[in-house]
Length: 408
Image (cartoon, rainbow, N blue to C red):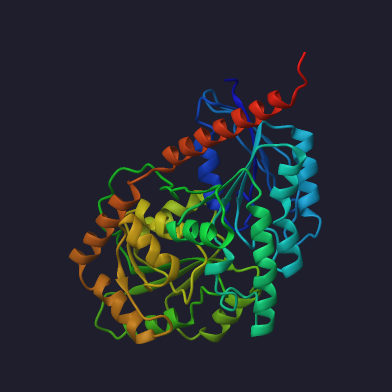
């Protein structure tokens, strides 16, 4: 089979959109596969002072970049379809979730029709869908403020899901998602795809660098990820009985919560030893995680498999998290573990963190278990899984085309 020219619709660093870290590692390993002749990246457009850059190196597939959509724009689906037709790839892979294309209801919904239009244009289409409407708490995620709006969004979310399911194949990362889509939509083209570990790292030492004990929260904050309870817990932990502590809040505001971290920083300006890093570039992520004693998940709900949990495992970190929703699913299915707390309860969260930072043996035990869990399936092998399915889709499409040719 000729080498594959694959178009990938996704965010990607230096873009700061949701799923950009997953795309970075996915494309990084995709370039190493012999089956790939070229990757045509179809990301969102960057500010004028930034550019996508991929080094040309022997043994790595070349990457062509066509920035063709903008977060929040209403015409993203049509722009993506036009870019696909321009590139004319062998197949198209979408790396998306329900808020990939906009924070407003209209822009998010219209953007999610892109796989439907690309499929209708004639290209084999695979959608990697990181969350589904049925398990998303719309109020926590910042999309609905009252029951009427929530019902309205869920109705249209159902219609959009039906459109997404017209793709040749829809991959989801949590078994419960497969069950829901098959039961509710009678879908026969949904498959379970492992999330995969981002790094093929050797076993870490599980020792901490000198200096304050760092408690890390990482992500996009302001909707279902909020740090007020974490800061209140941090205050409780700074009771003079421990070595110096530092709370590191790494990341940015959620698109649905502009100004959130700035308001938190102002509100808690009197609390010492809190560091806000802002956006963390991909090359700085290993340092941020390696320095942490524990990674905390200050969530009150979930919207899919957690990339941060997999990153914590990559670096052998103990985690503190609520046993809720998709986090509970991932823990049960993939072998991760941590100390658990009741969402919204600062005393429960402080006690869970204390069980890690006050007990180095427990911290190392959790870090080792999470590192082992992350080794279960490296993303390099996950990429092989996608390539196998793409090859099947392309052969099916070629067979269908051949059967439609008139007899001679």
